[in-house]
Amino acid sequence: MARIIAVANQKGGVGKTTTTANLGAALTMLDHRVLLVDMDPQGNLTAAFGLEKQAECTVADALLDRRVPLPIVPVNPATHPRLDLVPSAIPLAMAEAALSNKLGRELRLRDQLAGVQHAYDYILIDTPPALGLLTINALVAATGVIVPTEARFFSLQGLQMLQESVDEIMYLNPRLTLLGILLSKLDRRLREERAVAEYLRERWGALVFQTEISANSKILEAGSAGTSVFRYAGAERAAELYLALAREVVERG
Ligand SMILES: Nc1ncnc2c1ncn2[C@@H]1O[C@H](COP(=O)(O)OP(=O)(O)O)[C@@H](O)[C@H]1O
Ligand SMILES: [Mg+2]
Image 1: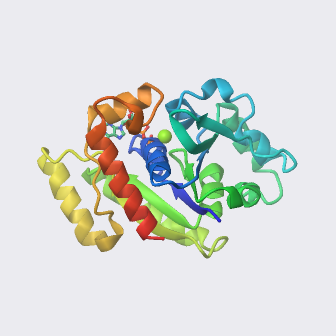
Image 2: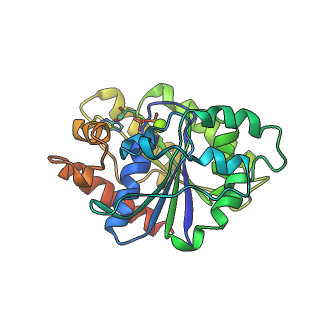
């Protein structure tokens, strides 16, 4: 039965999508079966694996109509075995508005995932940079949240807000826990980033993953090329970091 993990932070550009894609790929390298769910209308996760052409049927259809099964596509059986994806595209933004009038609007993703959970070891959900209905659906479906963050002073307040949202969601989903905070694009050459990383570890203790993903142009390039760091030349160091993160995620249960 899959462990369902949402990757969330209401701030944009902090590495949610990159973390979801590469952590997902890393878990498959450890022989786990993984489903990635793109809950962002921008469809960046879908594009991160070059699957935007497959996005005719998207997660939006299954959220709006319970009888429509989740559209699941294999990422690429040759390069990424054991990795599947539920695509998203811009109409998901309209679906979010339409969803707000529906019964059980916060539970739609949870109920859809219940039908496929047996086929995977991990389900990772990428979320948009907002705490709206799509992110709430992800947090209601999940039992753990990973919060990627930049090591900048202006990011710290956002973490507090996210913790408060998690506490709030527990009203609908008492099993939800904060699995970990991830320094997802850390540049240790910058004094501010070193200071914030240190502060984060003081403030949040063991909740901060030991593994720090360094800012690395190969990570950006792999995403633009439509693949993970495991299939991108020169990204070996980044691949090791995501593997270390995957091991920590597995250990945290
Ligand atoms: N560790 C990293 N090193 C370099 N660039 C990164 C790293 N992580 C993410 N990025 C880049 O930063 C940008 C924002 O990341 P993304 O994952 O799209 O954030 P979000 O999903 O939170 O908006 C993207 O261009 C991505 O390629
Ligand atoms: Mg994103």
